[in-house]
Image 1 (spheres, rainbow, N blue to C red):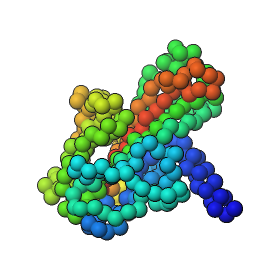
Image 2: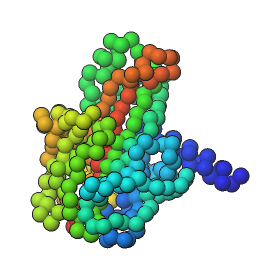
Image 3: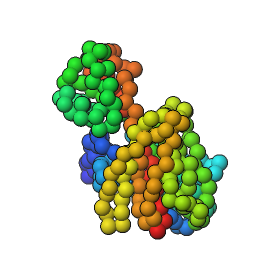
Image 4: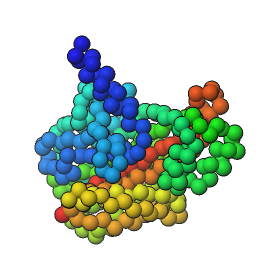
Length: 268
């Protein structure tokens, strides 16, 4: 009975996280081969959030990529941290995670407008009205598409596109000795660069102070973002689009959001 109660509590924790950022947070961004490799899945804001447990029905992809190798992250129901394994051979390690769809209900129109403004979708209100959707008690479906860059040993190597529905692709490696403090990324959506997309940058300093700034991708879906040694970073970019299920039933979501996230640290 206690085990069942624990599982129920963990499930409720996982499904109650219905807003804000989602990210992969390694305990250490730099580890040696054969050392413990531990990372949490977190949901919250400003680098503060709850740790989500490993539940197979809550994700569609959870993998570690290094070079040409792509390995599933194994776990057991309720495991927290969700990733706990042994570091592989040295090189750049990319953790990938895509969640299964979840949904939320907007009780008020104002809350949706605030979200659309925050994530830079100025046409959302007009599109919503043109579709004839209600302005209260309407639903949104959402998925998370997160990556994290870790260094095993020398950390050398390159990120690439891994076919996530939307994703950040790191064009520079912050663990490379020649890194110049300019983090170059590309935002992809449905396998193509996403131009003029808003990126929200969360900068976590060693004293746990968080600074939030905004930038945009260029016409090629790329952005160059100055970063600071000793700091950790979360990049966030959101796609808002009409749901394919809209109109199929009264409870069907009318909007869908896809959240791309990238975390990494810059060696001090």
